[in-house]
Image 1 (cartoon, rainbow, N blue to C red):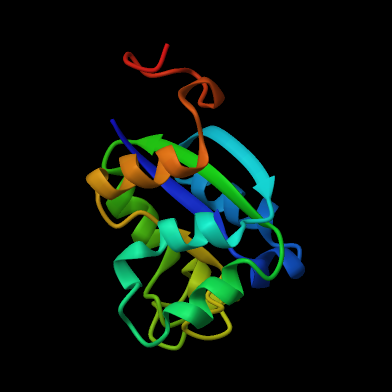
Image 2 (cartoon, helix red, strand yellow):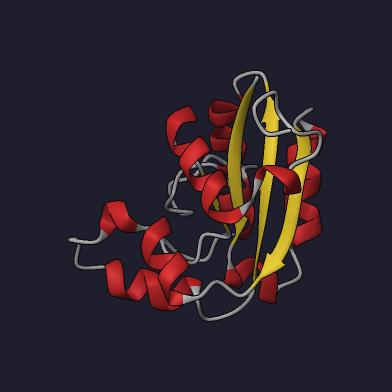
Length: 144
């Protein structure tokens, strides 16, 4: 079973879409293991988006994700990473397949409603940034 971090970004939160997005993922059979609402601080944002640190859009990305509360969630399931990314659609909502979360609710490349881990390894790293093992239910074999 794979796990993935999902973030519901400020633009989706401001439009009241958290429940709809979580429902779509659960509706595909993915299991919700952890959930919290938070206002991401700059330090966490910079760690989360560290892979983009040298890119020209890094500062704007950090400013955006820290601009309003978000929801962080952990989902689990068979091929969870790939399934979640397919349900979300392409990063650019204009290029996302019809019926995906980003096609339906994304506004532009940055304000695209959601984030999801792009690999199992990154999922582990990202989940650890937002959740302790005790916050994930049920705890995994090494998180008890």
